[in-house]
Amino acid sequence: MRYLLVDEYGLLLRRTALTLGLDDNWLARMLRLGVLVRIRHGAYADADVWQQLTPAGRHLLLSRAVMLQYDDRVALSHASAHVMRGGPDWGLDLEKVNVTNLFGRGDRVQAGITHHRGTTRVSDVSRLNGHWVTAPGRTAVETAAGLELVAAVCVLDWTLHQGLTTREELERYATVWLREWPGSIELPVAVARSDGRSESVGETRSRIALENLGFEPEPQWAVHHPSGRLAGRVDLLLRRQGVMVEFDGWVKYGRLLKPGQTITDVIKAERDREVLLEELTGLRMLRLVWADLQQPAEIGSRVARIVSHRRAS
Image 1 (tube, rainbow, N blue to C red):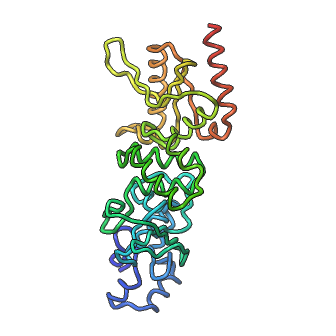
Image 2 (cartoon, helix red, strand yellow):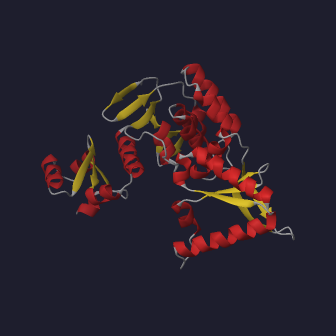
């Protein structure tokens, strides 16, 4: 019965259980047995499913519960809408589900939900999974407005890269935000520094770190064979320094896995690709990992050493 009651996401609402002829005593018994966990008032999740979810996954399940419990007077918004669309969750506060009240009420935190208000036009919302969700451009700006600069740029970059918005739309929404909610000093800076060519949080953070060091990284630089055939793209190019930059993360390697391959196979293939690109361009490759982003000054020193070595050779 357990698997017949929860939905495809592992979610069960109290009202659904009551409709099926079950009562609060049954729900309490399922909680005691560890079959279900209560994730908010009137909403339960399959305990095994909940245990395996990431923080972002748990936030998504909570968001689904909230949207099922509320009617069309609200739209999922801010970080909740961003994550619902598949956006990266780095730097986001996912403690509470965010909704925007479409008829003016809001600006309160209640029962694990942050209720927002603001002028909402028809073009500011869209339907997703049968519920209202703020439009991608508005979602990105409203999410970014509450974040530190680098996390804000990561949100904007992802939304641009997915083709869900344009720079012009982001600028318009930022103007509206600052008019209605003045004080978000970093927001115009974040919009100005966003670049939809960056394909991941790691690439965005690497680009921002290099820019903060005074470099001018160019995202997604293409390298070609003498015949003109594409040999590959590098995450970033430091043209003046003659350095190519790649960000390496396990998620990236996982994306590159082909049937029958292991991570070791992918790493070797990436190393062979690096040698090829260096041979074709005469440039050196700098590889960054998550730990490097915590020490940006050391990244600058590594670039300097590569430049010095090139000049000496």
